[in-house]
Image 1 (tube, rainbow, N blue to C red):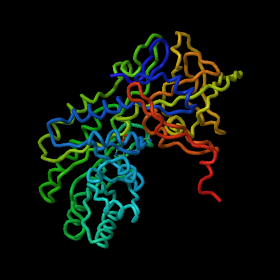
Image 2: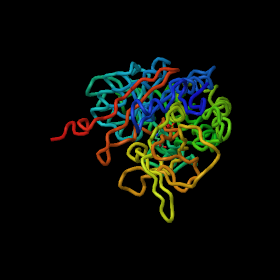
Image 3: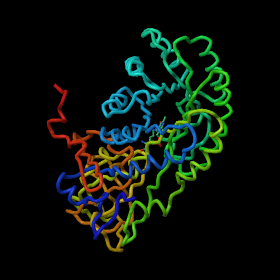
Image 4: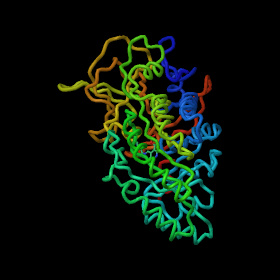
Length: 428
Ligand code: LLP
């Protein structure tokens, strides 16, 4: 399959020339490959073939309605973290009965909305929340399906801001206490049904070992909860990492496939093969909650180079996208390859690529050897499909970029660029 590739010297998304898209729709511009998204979803689904399972896409990674619609048509489940995400999923044709609702701070309004829509399960993050859901369900005269999130105290070995499975993280209930929480709930709470168990140890994991460690540690708990309380599912979370780093060689024909072959630390086949033996005989419906794996490498952010500034210490390439459009480098020191749309020659220059925002953290790379590009040219920030647009803001009163979904030779605007008037909506 083809995601992003040079063809006749120009970078394409599937069969669409990115330069033409940038000229037609302006920059900054997010572009997604529909077939890459579908391919990733199907590969993950395939990795668990043979057991009762569901791939519940983590909506937070990329919540564009058209992306959700693609996955809804594949009968994906959805992992949501707010009433807003549930609303989007429903608007996109997703089935609430295949939605799990995570997050440490659900409000009454969100709990009521999710109960009215008939979600599959709340993934509950504390005993206090469990009691509150019981109370709200009782007030509505319904029974709330719940799973409690276990914090297994396993080190995911990822960036500290996206590590969630250690005791010092705010997520889930400590492994040592969780069984008592189920026991108390089954005795005392009449308006909840103990439907499952959930865990998620972190994001952008590049080795299968922490997954294996966590699944091995928690599997006996899942078995015991099934026997004692009749739970039917175990969500083992998301977190499968993707490759962000790849030096683009001159003459590369297919950027996406090369990337997949070159440096991939964790393949989906390896993930499936390592996890399957540990879960296949549990007799539970196994849920996965992948976000980044499905959409991360399926998207790029196109940005136009405005100026070059040479100082005594550095050469800066100033582009029209900023940290408000893609915050990952500023927030997590995230690495995104920067690739000219015109296929470059072998020459490399050390540069900082920076945005227009009034903050020193507004950079996409520092002191990185890049193929040379000049003001007037457009470059692609690769692997920007997950946690890209969804984390964008209007900081510095900058309109949000447009989003395009490419399917074969068709490019569709799936979100219009904000106008200056849009920026003032709701203000007095
Ligand atoms: N399930 C739960 C409960 C989660 O909290 C998350 C992500 C996922 C699933 C999906 O994880 P994934 O498969 O995408 O790794 N903004 C950060 C990532 C934050 C992840 C938050 N939770 C970044 O740009 O790296």
